Length: 250
Image (tube, rainbow, N blue to C red; front, side, top):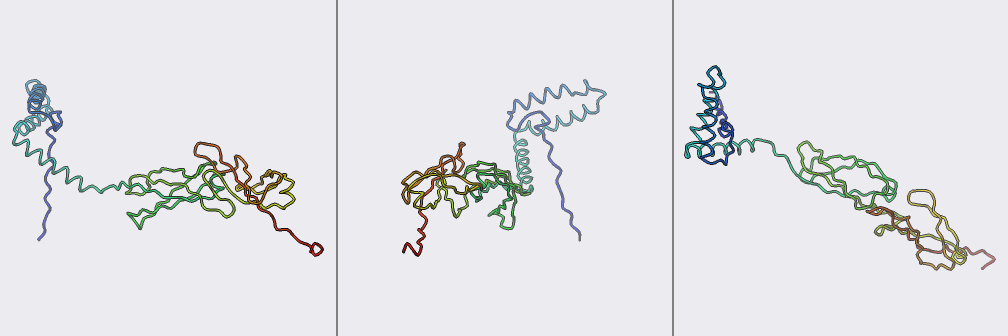
């Protein structure tokens, strides 16, 4: 035996027929019906089939909405149909994801372009890939807010930039710190000492005469980018090279 699923015909929107919203009063229903019925009356539109259809729709709407009991039953049916339609629609996930992206010091200074894979804890099997372009002189802590790219996903992904720890340079706020080895003669006399920058190339560090082991030399504007523009400083900790003793000196 074959069974057929019966589908009820959709309810006509009697409120729309009268040009009203669902919160209208009984007096507004009566006034709207009278005005429209007069406009589309067959005596005024004798040669218009559309006017006859419109008059039938107006009468049907007023027959339901003009009776408080029938209107209540009609409203109940409309609400039930709306809930059913909403349940049948696939839910769109509105979920924001925040993920840290760790970059090298030179990436903040020179800029970088990379693909970032983002995993959604609510969908362990799904991975989204975003193209991230970091402009030169971007400060650590900067956030990129991008629309979610998943087919069923709403919301945003927030990528937060963090510093990948380096071997030679350490980040302290907007400043960079490192060590520089010099010989005892340079420490005593002072002068310029050459060291490599994080971005490549070389920097000449002014060494004050008589600098002691462990002292810090500040080079302004050679640190990390600041959130409001400019750069922090490079703090160079002075250490001494081991003395090389010859056989004669022993």
